[in-house]
Image (tube, rainbow, N blue to C red):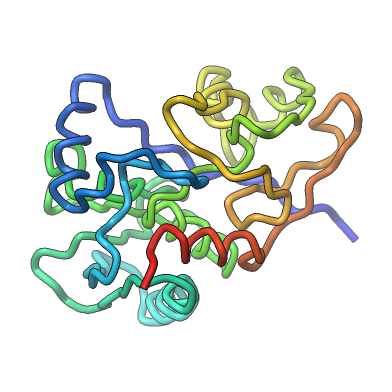
Length: 236
């Protein structure tokens, strides 16, 4: 059986000059974002619990729309948050299938029109299946990559990772690989739960990516910690 092709979503990093606006936007949406939050999410970018977040497809087929909607709603089964899919003129989440790669704005960053103009997508699917949809909507709810958790101790073989991701289908320069794979979030910036190797926010890594030949499975469903954690982020 062949190993899966390794694809990564591209972290949507807010330019430094917009960080004060990002924080103001997040607090206006959910005043609790002003306080430290003990979880594996960007503590300052959670939607207000109970909110209905509007979702609009900017392009794509009816089949693709149905697949995304079906899988995205799994998050709502565990969190006090709701997705309203429709032709909304002012949707907070706007989805395209025509841009490069798979990615999403993180939480309330989607409200920043200076970074994500009102006519532009806040999420893109360059490839799609259940795992990718769950992963990108995890970002949309404020979750970040599990492999960048400061609690993890992955022994990267950096040369092997850089070499692989420089080729197809990613074609990443070394700087992007370092920013999206090796760099960890600072503990003082983001509060994390314990590292969860089963999290939907962790990508598949083959043994060859680590010096101690420790592989990480391709997670395809929400883990027990994912569901417990998102319930803590969005309590009833």
